[in-house]
Length: 280
Image 1 (cartoon, rainbow, N blue to C red):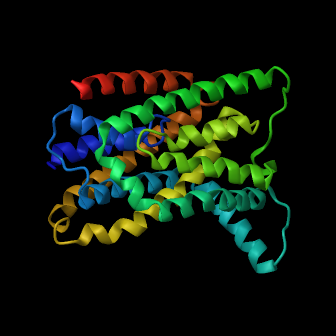
Image 2 (cartoon, rainbow, N blue to C red):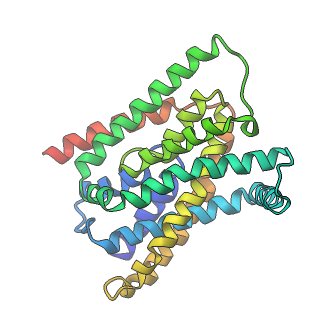
């Protein structure tokens, strides 16, 4: 993988990881469409992709640093005191913990099985179409529900069971083509959250999962095969982080009034076109 290819993939990942269009799906499909001779089944490629995710997770942590500082303080206080104090940050923190557990467990248990899909662009294109359908249907179901219920659930008022359900939607993102933020946002909308609250909860949920996956894969960067390319990988991680920070800043403003429909149409269209081109 050349420096140019690494930078393109890093920029692509930094943007598409947070936009609900599946960074992994694009990372699997684009090299094949461009005719790049990259072995996506190689463990070093997976390590590179994971390092890009680490850059994204760091960008999320920086953007939401005030939220995380308040959440960590509140959760730590409840642990030390041995009781709940009922603050909004404390309730949100424990709901984030509950929502993170399912995806973390499934990711560890099914890592090898899912990795085999990384070298299958056609499967990624099909999942990308499915991603568009999920967001389109989610928006339609939520819009009908609004007609009967004008109220909105606050993040800290989410039932723990609902938080676990929203967090479990991240499991779908293990499939290349299914967006982490898209699936969790749809689950949040179905839980009666606003688009802005659903996006915030999705980004907060994603931070520990992405960072944890990166930490587990960091040793792969120091293998004899990957070590000579470490400098290129690190530059890619920085580029992905910068792109992710700008993306989340834009999306948090967008979802104050915007919806998932445009991303749903894009995913379906890109997936269909990719399937056609890959089949030729």
